[in-house]
Image (cartoon, rainbow, N blue to C red; front, side):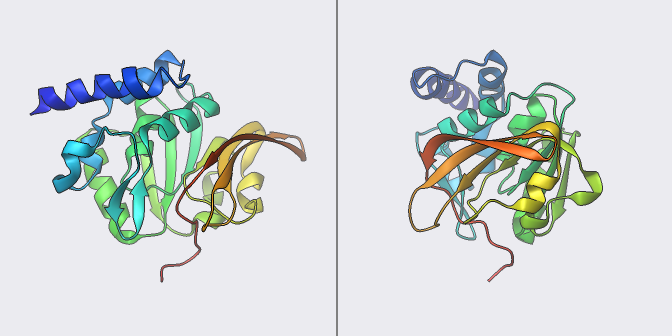
Length: 213
């Protein structure tokens, strides 16, 4: 069975990521290494490498492989940098960043997902990850500043507290917009007290909320 998953990972790289312009050898290697099927419900694992997002429970999803690869590549991560991730989910994006050698601080609102992500990341021996159960809009101020920030759910407007936790020269990738329509994936670059915004892609992400229902 594991050999079949390895074949599916290679096809994911060859059919979904490279043709759409993912060029970073480091990102492609990480995507080909991390066992995505372990981050989805067991009954859905045979679909884990398909070209679409998948449900992980609690009205949350694991993002489409291309979106994970694209957002990661846009961060331009290198080993040793300090990353804040907002929205741990099942931990797949977290694992990709950890595989790339980043020091990952991840914040997740749903306690059930925190527990599950911690378990699987521990099984895979990603020791360079810390996960906090908390409100993503607050970030992780005790550990700021961060070299890069990645937000995997969509706030309606730019979360200023997160921008404040970027170091000078830092970058943030965040989808902004109404949860009921497509959002714009933006790259924010901080320089002193100023920021610049680049629009990257139209995406559809789960909404970023401040508290559980």
